[in-house]
Structures are given as structure tokens and as C-alpha cells.
Image 1: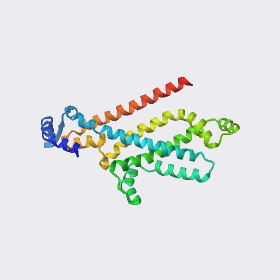
Image 2: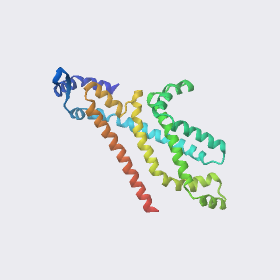
Image 3: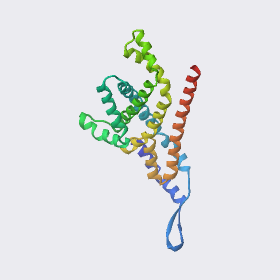
Length: 254
């Protein structure tokens, strides 16, 4: 892989840096401890490599979000259906994906889904599908809450002018419910960005994977993981700020 190749080219220079900055200190009682000297130069020297996983992180998170919105809308509407069968099926789906760990879902989809479907999936495709299915469960509950938050009189008014339940949902209920869903949906986006760090376990070259790879070649995990945390903090804070702006604009329109 290109990232691994580029990292290997820097191993000797990074190792030299480690040797000059990490020193052994002999303590009393003849015990030996490691004295660690921070050097964030490793971050700046490898900044292009560290940021190379940003596109993969966004790709996985936002494709999974798109899947989650489609799946979640369908199951969220089913949760409010008059049909007990539809309600039960949607409730079962939500229960499975909300009550199992995300990491287990990633591993199961990566190893088991190709066997059941008889197809080959790349690691990035399987991880995106797994996160999308999980996002669908949480989005379904957001959609359900938004729909149920609309006054019952809206349904009755739509019925008096001859609108079907589907038309009422599409033209009246969902547009109003969407405004109430913005904040929780943004929270879901933030959660997806954070959960996307788990895909590194399956070899997807996201931000976390690149930082882990650099840490093993430079022996500078503290600096690199500190910078990794800062990256996720900036991304998630920016998304939350964007959501707050949208909410304020919608509030002014009301």
C-alpha cells in the first residue's frame, strides 16, 4: 500500500529522532525507567500522511449516513404504521442494531455477509455497510420521534381534504418533522465519524489506521494519538457548529 511504502521510507530518519529524544534514566535501587521527551516534530514531518486518511474517514461516515437515512426513514415510518407486522419488523431491526456493539457488527458483516450472499466485499465496503445498517437503526428512532411529535390535528386536517396516509406523510408530516430531527441527526453524524475509527481494525486506511501505522514506525504514539484526537475533535466540533447554524436559521423562519 502507498501509505505503508511512504512510511517505510521514513523509518530510519524517525528512528534516529526517537533515539535522540527518548533517554534511559537509572533510578535508585538499580531499577531502570524510561524518560520520555515529547517531540511533536514527528506530526509536522508526517502531516501529509496523517491527513491522507481524512478522505476515507469522510467517505465511510457520509456514505453510511446516506444509507442510514434511507433505511432509517423506511423503518421509522414502519414504526408508526398501523400494521402490527410492520411495527414488529421495524422494532426487531432497531433492537438488533442498537443492542449489539458496533465493532461486532463490523466484524460480522466483514466475515459473514460475503458467505451468506456469495459475493466478495472489500474491507471499506463491508465497513460502510455495517455502519450504515447501524445508523439506520438509530435514525429510525429519530424519524419515529419526529413523526410522533407532530400534532395529531395535522393528520385529521389532511384527511378532511382527501389526502391518503402516504400523501399526508410525504407532504405534511415529514417536512415538519425534519426540523425537529436536525439536532439528533447531526448527533448521529458525529457518532458515525467517531465510530468510523473502528474500521481501521479491518485494514481500512482512515485517520486512525494511518496514525497507528505511523506510531509503529516512529515509536511516537503519544504525539500521534494526541494529534489524532485533535483531528476528530475539530471535525465533530465543526459539524456541531454547522448544525447549530442551521437550527438558528430555521428558528428565524418560524
